[in-house]
Every structure is written in C-alpha cells, then in structure tokens.
Figure 1: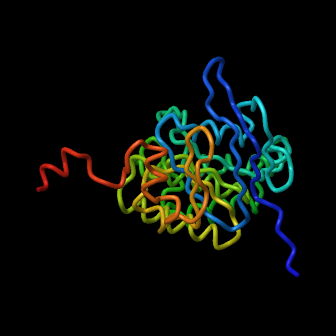
Figure 2: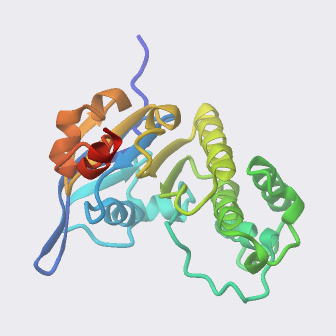
Length: 255
C-alpha cells in the first residue's frame, strides 16, 4: 500500500479581512508534490491575497496554512517556498546585474556574511540556463525587456531551490516566445517534483500549462482538472458570463 504523500500546500478554512472588506472567505486548497495548479478568478477575487497569506505576508483572520507539513514562518525560513509577484518593486536604474538579482534567491542558504559559495554560483548559472538567460548574467537588470525581467525573477525563485513556487500572473505583459518558454520551464519544474501554484488569466492555455485548476471568488468554487473547472456553469459563477466566449457585440459583428 502506497503511503499518502505530505501535501506540498494545505490551506484550510482561510479567511482574510481588511477592515470591512472580506478578501478571502473560508478558502480550502490542497496540492500534492509535482503538480501545477492554475488559480483562476476575476480581478479582486483574492488571488494575490491568497499568495500573500501563504507567504505569511498578510495575517489570516481565521484558518491555517501548511507548507510541506510546516507552518509558513518555518517554511519561509527554510526556503521551502518562493514567490514571484505580478510586479516587482524594483528601482530599474539601480546598478545591479542579472546574476546578482538571481543570487538574492540564495541568501537564505548563505552564512550571515552572505558570501556566495561555489554551490551558490552553480545554482545561479543553472537557474539562468533554465530560463534561457545565461547570456545576460552581467547585464544590468534595467536594460532588459519586460519579458526578460520576468524570466530573471523566475530564475531567482528556481535558484532558491524551494519545492513550492507561487507565480502571480507570470505571463502578464510578456510576448508569445517568453510565454512558451516559461510554460516549458514550469512543466519541467513540476516534472522534477516541484509544486507550482500559478495565478493566470490565460484560460485558453490552462490545459497545456496545468495539471489542475482552482476557481477562486474569495473562496474556492471548484478545484479539479482544467476541463472540469472551465465548464460554462463554473465560469458563470465566477465571472458572471463565460469569458471564453466572445463579447455580445463581437459576436454580433461577426455575423
């Protein structure tokens, strides 16, 4: 009899309130290792808040979060979870190279002097190679395109070596080439045992990217295979209309 693996992520009855606003209301979500889960919802549905609660950046009003069987504080200190937000608060004019940005993902594994060891340099090189950015290691981060910057911050998360990755809209503002490259990287990471929770608006590409999907509207409305989650009745509950269908005026013009 095969033992049930410890969940990579277990969110139970999680609620987050901002004064009079309920951002999350009783979220339940469990992910097992080696899977990609797409987190789908409208703007304001709570996707970013859920990521911040998992990271311990915001404090839940009720409920619990467990990462690999440990609490969020312990998991973060151990480098067991990496977070790539939708946009980075970065001074793009600051003279820091691509390699130095990715090296910050190794800080939790270095001594208090933060002197990189050969293993740290090797992890940075491997992460940049994985996102096809190894040739830019000395380039100043502000000289890159938006898509290239996105790859660099994904590389930083990879270099950290965390088994759980949270990617908030990784395809926002990138070209098709970068989207395809990141999709390949995400699938490769899952194949090597990582668990990835991806917030995305790209419903059409969900089945290609993800093993499963969760529809969020302050709580998880449905969680399962992408084709199941994308059923019209489920999308109507979250979006009010089926977002995969053309808008009424577009359909009228197409007649």
